[in-house]
Image (cartoon, rainbow over all chains, first blue to last red; front, side):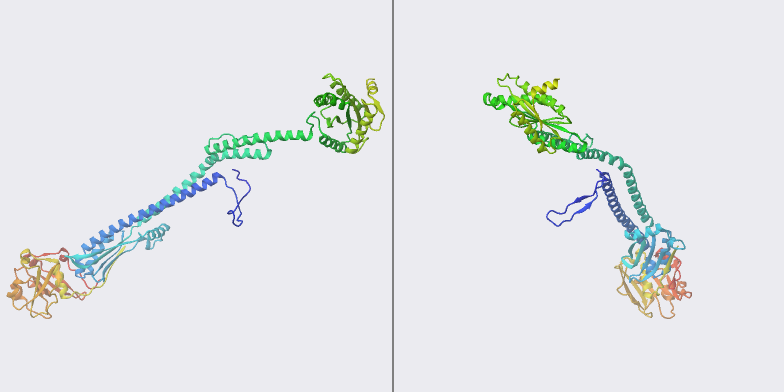
Length: 449
Length: 159
């Protein structure tokens, strides 16, 4: 995934008001880290809370049992003191509790709850010693867990007679501290997990995101180049591999269909710009290229020549030998004419037996005439292919840009006029625009000379 | 550090003293046989009557019997000699001597005459305390609660 990808737009509920908001994509590894850390934190928290709750319940139960036991012992030794309302005896009985650091308070009460004697333990920490944070935490946690102090009350009986009550309160300091340590240990475990995950998340994240990054690189290449020949490489991550296979299969389909579309477009272009019979360019393509040459002349001052070519007696050939023979002749002469031209030249059929040759970079009548004579020879040579009884020749008109016309229509019209002037002059002739009609044979002899 | 705070207790009444001694003194088996589960507390007619009739201690009903002559001591379990004034207890204690009758009286002279338990004034505290005549008690076969045998501490004014 691209961490630097632009913010995506997320749509609202379909049919509802527009609640579009921007969200910034986040890397998979980061998202995994967040989920794992959150899950671990929740699990540790829940586990710690559950264990603390259970431990607190057990602790409270244990403390209650201990308080009950101590209260029973006190009650067993306090019957005389209560019966005689002898506070001194009660004091001695309760003084024995001073050896216990868990008993915080003990009282002997008469049946009407009047206190006979009270024993109170003073915690060492409260006498001239500053309480630490652990002590404060101990108190807070003990209170929160309801184990700060547990009180047991037992009747003092003698022969079934109620003489009073023994009441004992105990407090387990070490237990609360143990729970604090437990919490701290849990926090340390969680911290270790976070640290471990932070260390391990890099390689793990790369292992997951690397195939996706390669996937993204391929899609970006396709987007930039428009070529569907790229393929996503294989990977060891099963889900990404399946996605890659599907994506590559989709690319296969797109590539095949794109090729088909291109081929059809090529055919359509051929139909649009070329004569279907002879394969020569049509008028549309001719005019387009002529316009390009005119534009090019304005940039780099390069002239060009236009040779108009109209077959002589082709109608007679068509009528007497049939259209199929005429078509074969047209194809043959077109092939031969194109073979005489340069790749940069354009040989176009305007319709029927009329053709145009567009010759870039021809700056003199002599050079244009050389090409015109070649074309005339090509037409003549085509007659010998099928040993036709009727021989076709060509009447040719030649015009030069820019001297014979500065616009397409103007130049074409003048070439056309020269061509028909040549035909009117006796056929099988070449005529320059605005010039005298020259006999082909005369021209050939001149050329040869 | 720890601290014991004793709440000043009110003095025991004569009835409460008697009930306490009944509670913590065990009579010899021969003395309680045929008693029907009752403890007979005998008082000379010259002394104020104790308000103990019908009360129970350890499941035993207390019966108060007023007697006029020492020879009537035979059915008694406890002889309460708690008069408001000086009294000559010698004839009574003589009649009781050797019998399993717990005798409770006022003043140290009562024990000196052979009484089992005597309540004496505690000048230091202004209260009362008891003394046990172990010779009399042992001769009569009484068993006394060990806590009761401890040296009687000062009471009523404690802190």
